[in-house]
Image (cartoon, rainbow, N blue to C red; front, side, top):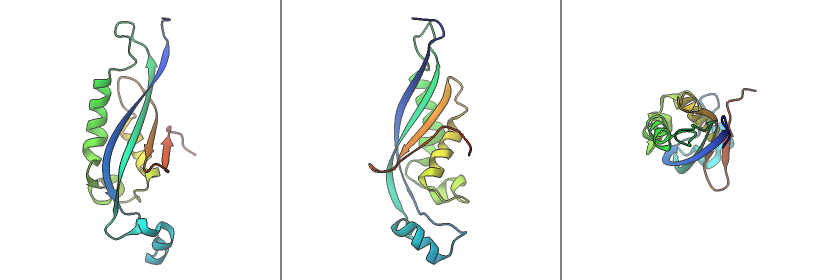
Length: 141
């Protein structure tokens, strides 16, 4: 195996959370029109699948880019514990001012994970349903 071989590692995690899509910048009518049934006053939930991709060089001693136990512990602390079985609008400070769309959820998870000390975060992909997935790699428009 070559020294300095760069490998990308993907790992999946799951959590369940609820949210209500509602913007304070829109009228009640506009919110109903834009978000439809997702604007339900009581909210609705999803079983999210999050794929985290990190990269780095393979450690010659361990043969790994990053120890999965280290990555799992970091994701558990930064994402699973704060989001699992929560109402995102109320229980997660970031979503008290931002509509908790999956786009915003994806970028929030990226921000929480970008400081993983053992490898470089490449991207975060959040699957909301079997039809909807969002991916963020830290780029700004």
